[in-house]
Image (cartoon, rainbow, N blue to C red; front, side):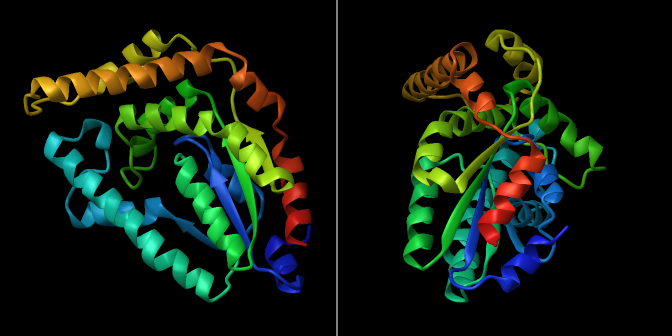
Length: 264
């Protein structure tokens, strides 16, 4: 099989950018490995985030983190995001380097803005979208820290839940925005779809403890936010949206072929 890096070297014209989209635990890393992108630069915000957590002596098992550790983790993620936006990506673009951006693409606005910036800089941009069901996303996250011997992070389940909601909701806008430069892979199966059961199994056991009391205004804001996320989740779990994602997806092998064609 011709390696994708070899195709890149032989290709003339524009540099290429492959943007990955998918919730935590969706299997993006596994599918990326299966696509044989050896030699192509991969930027993953998690690498910077994990290094920052280690330097700050914050546990990588964030689902069991203290309120103080979660606060430090939020700061670390903000710093890692800033480094990606203001340092890593601008340097790659300035050097016209082809690369893979391995992230969740949970923010539709930021991802489409990046797409526009890359295209303005002469890049051809492709999105590989990896879907997985909500329970698998939460389950993979819950087991990640232990499975890697403490070398990889497990996020707070509430963050995984909200990220899954955003990424899943973004499927159709991404499909429309990227057009022919878009392919999705479904990494899922028959799983729990009742939101109350999912929350009881994956979120309730890891509720933050010893948190500061909230003001009435903060309580109202928090309740409103949770209600909005829950409403979106119930809609995504019960309507035809998820089935549309699955029906629109291809196998890993087919995705590899489409990606080869994009890079050649």
